[in-house]
Structures are given as structure tokens and as C-alpha cells.
Amino acid sequence: MNPLLTDLDRFKVKVYKLAQRMSEPEVLSNHVLYQELAIEHSRISELVENLDKLKRLETEIAESTELLDDKELKEEAQAEIERLRPEKAALERKIRNLLVPEDPMSGRDLVLEVRAGTGGEEAALFAASLLEMYMRFAERKGLRMEVLAQSPTPLGGFREVLVGVSGKQAYQYLKFEGGTHRVQRVPVTESSGRIHTSAVTVAVLPEPDSIEIKIDPGEIRVDRFRSTGPGGQSVNTTDSAVRITHIPTGLVVTCQDEKSQHRNKERAMRVLRARLYDSAVSQQHQRIDSERRSMVGSGDRSGRIRTYNFPQNRVSDHRINLTLYKLDSVLQGDLDEIVQALAADEEARLLDEVMKSSQADLHVDQDVDQEAGS
Image (tube, rainbow, N blue to C red):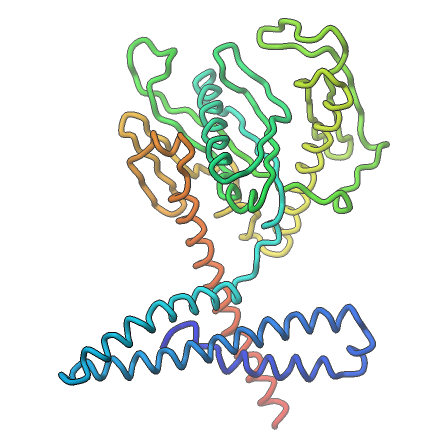
């Protein structure tokens, strides 16, 4: 049996029980609760309807398959199977979308933080390469990117750079990038031609709504100072740079790219809100389930997620054991194959969790029914 059809009967029971619950006086008098139950009832009803369609389709395909041994009907049966298979595949996709809950962050803009890790100047140069990769990818997807803050190095790298990313599905496209990115190549500073291994960390910080993260003005300290460039050279002759310290958490954000002090403060507050929101979401996830995180896998940003090997033109994503020999193309922003593979892996894992949860709920319902009948 198709695993998607395993819990069809349980979902039919759930629709019935939701309808009963919605007719109870205490629910009818509670508009908010009624709306929540109505939305769930609609989703499960649609799921049942599509599961019934899938069951009928599978029966039709099975009946046509049996006719393949009949010489007179074989051609007609084969044509019917070929017509039904795409319909079945589309229906299965729709059912999976109904089963797997939408990522609550899916509609968010985000702040992308790229930071040089181990490797000194070579790590900083690779941070610049990753930033360029993301900018090219964003351009392909019609996303908008705005550099909020940066800490450049004399050779053109970045110790740290913060970028605001906005647009349709911005978070969906980039949410898998959080983690440690390892690079293996001969640095431009290496005279003997030896391959070095360096690392860059990337954080994907979904931006909160203004009502979600309220920052008490009394809990921040704002310091103003003169902007400086690489090597300490003066960039500005006015105190336009801004450093904001969030006293309760100790988080510090510095912005100095704009000549306007007001604009620098605005950018710094945007980054601070995103960092506070990310921290709050991570803590919430830890309380719910120690194994669930806001990032793919363990969510530990110190964990290596991807390796970029220049001598072999190879990029490997270690979370899904995916290896591609087109590093040059990837660094030009061609991330689609990687993103799609990670999205498929996430969907499969979430679907597996839903199916296991459904089985557990089914056993609970059976136990309750047995107790009620005894």
C-alpha cells in the first residue's frame, strides 16, 4: 500500500471529531477557537478528499496493469497507465504539501551574516567569495540584497559582513545556508603552492515583525564614533558610526557604512532585532525538542555543512552526502541543485515525522475508544 494512504481512515475519523467539536456550545461561543478548528477541519477534509482520489487512481492503475498481459487490451491499458501516472504524481505532491506543515518563517525577509573563521586572511577572502555567490544567486531569484554592515580587510576580504535580503521566498531560498563552510584551495598569499583549509561561518537570521521584538530604549546603549576604513584610515570626518549594545544579552552591533548617523542606527537596530529574534526562536525550539533547531540538521553553526574544494572543482554538502563537480558554476550563484536537494530532504524528514505522529495518535484514539466501550 502507498504509505500516504496508511492513515486515511484515521483522518476521516479526525474530520468527524473536529466537526463534533465545532458544534459544542463552548466552541461556538469562542470565535477564536472556532476559527482555529474550522481551519484545521478544512485542511484535513481537503486531505481526505485527495487521499480518496489517490486511492481510486491506484486502483485504476492496478486494474490497467493487470490488462497488460492481454494482447488485445495491452496497448489501451499502457496508454491509460501513462495518462494516470502524472496525475498520481501531482496528487501525491499535493498531499505531501497538506501533510507537511509550512515553515512559519517561510514569508520572512532575513539578515545574512557571513563571518571569517579559521584561516586568517584566506578565510576573509573566501567570505567575500561567498558573499558574491549569494548576491549572484539572489539576482537569479529576483531578491533584493542590501549590505547593512561590513568589516573589510586590506586584501579585499571581509572579517564580517551583514546583508539584508528581501523578496518573495527569500528565507526559503537561503535558510539552508546556516553553518560552517569549509574551503580547500591554494591561497593567493601562499608562495609554495600548498593547499590550505579555511572556514567561514554563515548565519541566516529571519527578520521579526516589529510587534514580535520590542526593544526597550532603556536596555540599549548607543555609542557614536568616527567611521574608519581598512588600516585605520579615516572615511568620515563626523561621528556618524553607531555601536549599539543590548545590555540584557550583551549583543553588540556596529554600523558605519552610511554617512548618516540616523541611517547607521536604523541598520544596527534592524540587525539587533534579527539577532534577538533568532535567539528567542532557538531557545523556544530547544524547550520543545532538544533535537529540533531553526537550522537544518542540529542547527549548530559550528558544524561543517559544506566543503568547497578548488583543485577538484568540487562542492560537497555533508548533510545530504551530495557532491557536485561544478564549483565554478556554484560560485557564480548556481545553487539551485543544492537548494532543491536540501528542500527535498527536509520534506522527506518532516513527512516521516508526520506519519510517525499519525500512527502514535491512531493508537491513542484506539485506546480511548476501547476504554469508552468497556
